[in-house]
Every structure is written in C-alpha cells, then in structure tokens.
Picture 1 (cartoon, rainbow, N blue to C red):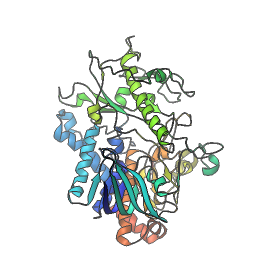
Picture 2: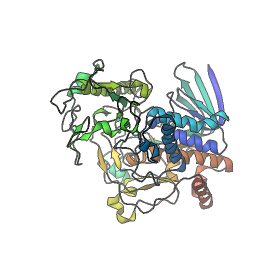
Picture 3: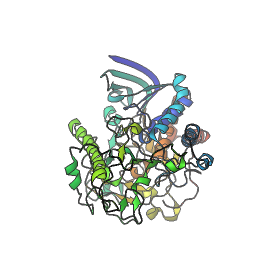
Picture 4: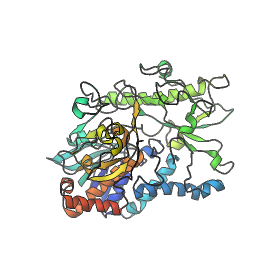
Length: 523
C-alpha cells in the first residue's frame, strides 16, 4: 500500500534536531511532516538513551530559549509526578540522576513525554503530522531540488511518499544525503585538505568514523541474581584488546589517557572514577523513601564503544553485522559485570545488576537505537575547521566570529576511538558559533541539514554533535526553511544578502536563539 503526504516542510528524522526543527517551523504556521525510524521521538535523549552532554554554563546561557523550555519542562515533570524530597522539590536546578557528566540526567521516558507534550498542540492542530517507524528509502529530485522522499513503514512494509517544498535531513546518519545526490563527506579528512593540525597526515580515510555505542539501563538489587544468558560473542569481547588500549576492553583500566582518571570502578571507590554515577538517571536519595529500590544508570562507557566497522557507507549485510556486533558488545559487558568484574572486596561480579528494558522500551533491554556520534556531513558553503575554534591557534582572540551566526555551542573536541583503529582524543575548544554557511549545501536548493550533518569536519564534529548544539542546529534549520517559504527567497540568498541575513538573524533572536557568546575561555 502506498500513501501520499503533502506539506510545506518534511523533517526526516525525529531526533533532537528533528524535533527542534519541526517546532520552529510549526510555530511559524507551516505544515510539517515529521518522521522517525523508531517509535520514540527524541534521539539521543530517548531512543539512544544518552543523558544530556552540555557545557558548564548551561543553566545561565548558551542554548536557545526553546531548549531551555525543554529542560525546565523535564524538571517540572518530575516535580509534578514524582515523590521528591523537600530539598529536590525546592531546587530550580534539580538533577534527577545527579550524574557526574550532566546537569540534567533524566529518564528517557520523561524526555519522551516532555517532547510529546511540546509537539502536541501542533499535532492536534494539524500543523505537524508525525509518522513513526518509518525510514527513508528513496528520493525524487529535479536538478537541485528534492521533490519527494519515499519511506518504508518497517512493521508493515508499506510505502509512504512525502512531497514537500523543503526537506530537512535530521536522520542520525545523514541518510538523505546519498538518496538525494547531495554532495557529502564522511570520515576523517587529511591535513593537506583542511589544514587542521590534528587531521590525518597523508590521505583522507572516509570510513575512519567515530565509534557507536548501544546503550542500556541498569539498576542494582543486592542479594539477587539477574545474570543474563551468556552472549554469543562473549568470549571474543572478554579477551579483546585494541592496540591502543593499555588493558583488555573489559577491565577497569581499558584506556590509555593522560587525564587524571587512571582507573574506573562500578560504584564509588577511593582513587577511582565511578561509572555508576557517571550517567545515572535516578539518584534515589533525591526521591521520597521507597520511591526507588535502587538508583538507575545508563551504560554508555569506554567499555562498550564499538569501533570494528561502520554502520553506514557499507553494504547492508555489513551494516547489520556491525549493528549486531555493537549489541553483542554491550550485552557482553553486562555479562562480565555480572559474573567476572573484579570487586573491591576481592570477589568477582555483581549479579544484582538488572537490565531495565522498561526504561528503554525494548524487549532485549538495550536502547531502541545505537548512539551515533558522527554522521555523513554535507559539503557546505562554509565548513567549520579546527583552526576556527582552537585555543592553541586562536589564543586570546576567542573562536572565529561568524557574521552569519545562527546559534552557539560549547564542548571540547571529543573523539572516541574510530573504525580506522585510532585511539580517541580530547582537545580543548573555544565556545563557538554555528555559521549559517555550514547549513547550506554547495548545490542543493531546498535540502537543509538539521542535526550533526552540517558543514563540519571529522574533528569539529566532535564538539558540534552534543545535545544543545544539535537542538540549535535543528531549530535554526526549521526557522530558515519557514523564513524562506514566507518570503520567497532561498537559503543562499538569505546568507548572501546582508539585509536579509540581518532580518533572519533578528527573527532568530526574537525566538530566543543566542547568536554570540560573552567573552569566554577555552573548554
């Protein structure tokens, strides 16, 4: 069965950027079709089960007003529906999990409920049509214009065709780019091509892509045994050690690093970094006694980064093999934790660790989708490079100021181990702007990137891929498409005409998008 949909803007991908784009365009009064490959919108926050990675000023500035509304609604959801302690109820910076990595570590189901509430008025008014469990399979183009996108409803196999005046690619891997013939880049560029000090010497490697992680949720029930069935690939992962690791994958010291943290532990332990607290999403001490029998934590750790192959730009059989490999790695890590992980009391294993598939909404207990750190990236009118944001190169001048800024972000250049067999590394970056030129493809007229598939490099993707930045990118893309449709201009014309650019930037400021940072130091 084929179904046809017509709209002003098709947002393909319902992750963080896709939701932000749909909201911005709907608030401008346009008709949107928003699609999502799983049955949960929200991407990193929900289907990928990754708590917010944000900068240290997030509570004061450094994000859009709409993103701040999302964060405030998350806190409000807990205060309206959960039995909190009096102190937690009073706190305007309540962090449900008190995670060490995040100032707002929340349950994926809460993030999902909040995003659904934010979209609800537009869905009920008919401005947004939400299509779940669909993935793009083809596109119809006419020269430099995308006419329609064909999607498959994965449970039934039905085909859906969405015709739109603008198409936004908010998929996690930039799936629309090859389908539409849009020029794009993957993997690691060479220093010769980008001039970046930390880029590869020699030739570029298009399949040298950051690792993916299949996250999962755990609680802990002391004295109980929740050991899972031994995973098929356990013996492989139990003995696996990459050349750049100083110990086996499954150990408390797997990484070579110059950072202060030299050893991990499961629970807090003197001289070690607690992985339990790292991405915890429910700290039971902040809830009324009896509300939680245990903390809840999400496992997105160094020990379950999967880098043995790419999940895009490879044949379908290979893609599926690597997706299953990532699942097997995460399940094997859990089995090791339950049965063999060294304990500070001299014992082995924590059988009380319980896989919480109810938290992630799945039967196998893992997240609905893998955490994708690096996407295909458009060849853009402007590409952000390391030299634009490096404190080593920019010194006291701050990051490169962009006249066409459509938002801001901040995070270090954070590269996890790659499919090319390279150890990850972490280098400082300066609080940066998002240039409009990085959202405009070199050729296509009505396709815009709406998440981490913008004009960045392998290196700068490492700091432009986090939650508030992806939201800002999506919001700017949705607002740009709406602006262009309302005024009968193209994104290229907006950027190249100083008056139009100023008018669009003013429209962003009016909706609470910050275009510049105060004077900041390196991150």
